[in-house]
Image (tube, rainbow, N blue to C red; front, top):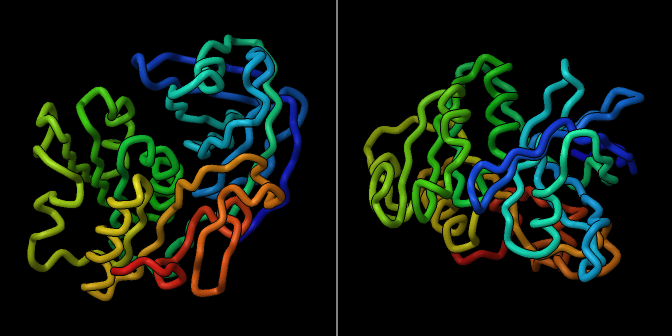
Length: 263
């Protein structure tokens, strides 16, 4: 489901470094209500203060606080552009195109038990999704994986949504190993009604295989590299059963039945 996109000059409410790899950026529209946004959609944030950066940065919508008229982004600091975003301060102006892409499908029935699986920076869009599920009266189960405990700086916020299980590759938090090997996925009789997933492609393929093997509906948010975010540059093309599509416009969320993954 798509919503109308807007080009807005947003004001920075705060930009807090969570650790050396992540920053939490909160923005507001000082003159009007923010446009409607859906879990799984993203924004293209303009980088103005970096002479070597010409393209906007696509960042998942992490959370929306409608009462405060704020939208939050969990920024993983990986290069010059995201490093500049992490240096923004209260009162700065940031130009954004949002919301972009298609979001997750929400359950239509009460009593469902959704499983949210996130790996690394892929946890970002799942917080907004989890909050919407809670508003619907559901209690999502969250399974989060990372290389180390430092790569899960927003864990405490997820713990407010429902049950949270964790894996880290170095064993510094939760079970040691990959998120796809967590004991919750091998337990018998887990009555998950649907699965939502975002993270590295090998992780999502494994989660899709888990869901397919149990007949559970599953949606994944792809992390293909994007440049324009509008479907013009063709950088993010994914080969699907419908043919080649731009992830930025036809996704980033896809039902696994649409993808040509060997699962």
